[in-house]
Amino acid sequence: MTARAPAPTADEADLPTLQRRILRDLGRAIADHGLIAAGDRIMVAVSGGKDSYTLLECLRLLQRRAPIPFELVAVHLDQAQPGYDGAPLRAWLESEGYDFHILREDTYSVVKEKVPEGATYCALCSRLRRGILYAAATQLGCNRIALGHHRDDAIETLLLNLFFQGRVAAMPARLVSDDGAHVVIRPLVYCAEDTLAAYARLRAFPILPCNLCGSQENAQRKQVKALLARLDAEHPGVKSSVFAVKKAPKSSKHSKIASPSTLARPTTAK
Image (tube, rainbow, N blue to C red; front, side, top):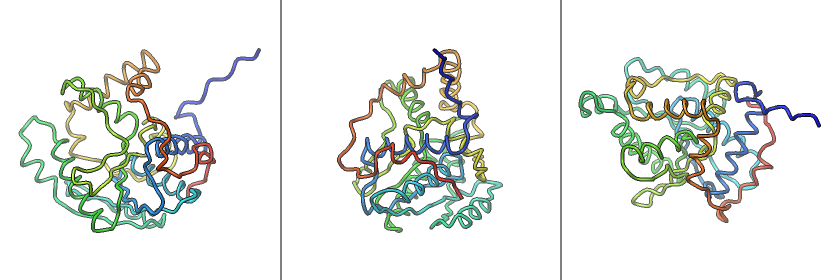
């Protein structure tokens, strides 16, 4: 009996293979958690990082073959960071033909002023950004906000809450705001970060650096990420085991998106 060849790693896989993998995981998340319904107008938050580029592109691929209609609007927030240059992102959005809006709010100065020296910026930065996105979604008539958080983000959040907050709480795939006015969805929640990174490299997305979060080497999330990477290298499958702690529900009746198998056909990106 001939031994089966091992599956290619994310770095070895070609673009159609990675695309099939991402669309399969995207479809599963949408079906499991009822993330998209007919008539939704979805605001996709595009930070300029690998995850949000991939999310936007794959949602449009899904949109083209889905049996229900939904709209996509890309929104990018310029937070006035020193050295920021959003021209590559704008050029890419224009060349790809997306409906998009670029907002500018100086959250950078607020975070630098309010956060004490040595403390992490993430919590305040995230709250400010979320408030701006909520307001933009209302103004643009979007009933859902799609964020690019992936499986590794969900695992890291689970461990951060466990280690530093003493509670078991994971990042939800679908979250309704306290006032019920906004629904936040995370369609990439089943996608591994290395798959998204490999896809972004092959697509050569114009990545915009973040000079705020990226400047803090002692951030707890970075420490947890490094711990997970080391454990997964020594014990392959550790990440999958941690992710299984938060079991996905059965397919939701609210989602009429086609089954994951029908979404896995590769489509050549522009």
